Length: 109
Length: 114
Image 1 (tube, chains in turn yellow, blue):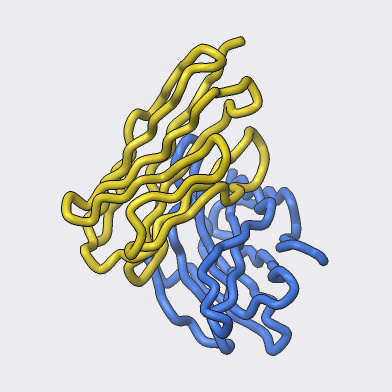
Image 2 (cartoon, rainbow over the protein chains, first blue to last red; image 1 turned 90 degrees about the horizontal axis):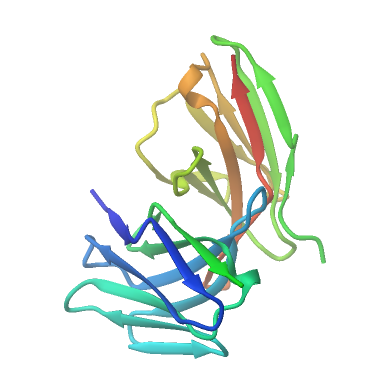
């Protein structure tokens, strides 16, 4: 069945450094790849998404890249800030929207 | 413009009982998806409703059922509760008619089965 693998499970960086989270997907029909941020006790919130006809998308400090051939996509956060600390989820949609297991990002001041 | 709303926020049940969770989609949305999120895990897809019909389903047993009403709101029913059903249940809405696949989540219902 469809599967999304996400790495790393935890990531700790110093404020101002960059953070990279990587995901791979199994369903070659996947054409939509959103990323969600979930703070403790809160709902997942969409932070950026990309469709399969685009290789890269950027929104201020956040960027996502997609390699359809290799079936992997990545989230890049530059100039990290303590408020970026949260759990980040990638997801891929072929038919259903399938989520990865999450990456707990900790940004230390 | 109200976002996705879910009720109740918390619920405690015992094994074998039945539970109904409710969701109102974001204004303008017509599609509701339900997810189960266990502690420390990613959301797991349960099913999706559009035009009052179950459109897609994940790997969940028949104990999990749902319904969508003409006003697009939705219910998730779980029968014969097991301890393992304890989780955060998230509802998410989108607009299939507008071909807008961005999914917006509610705050969830935290279900505890004792």
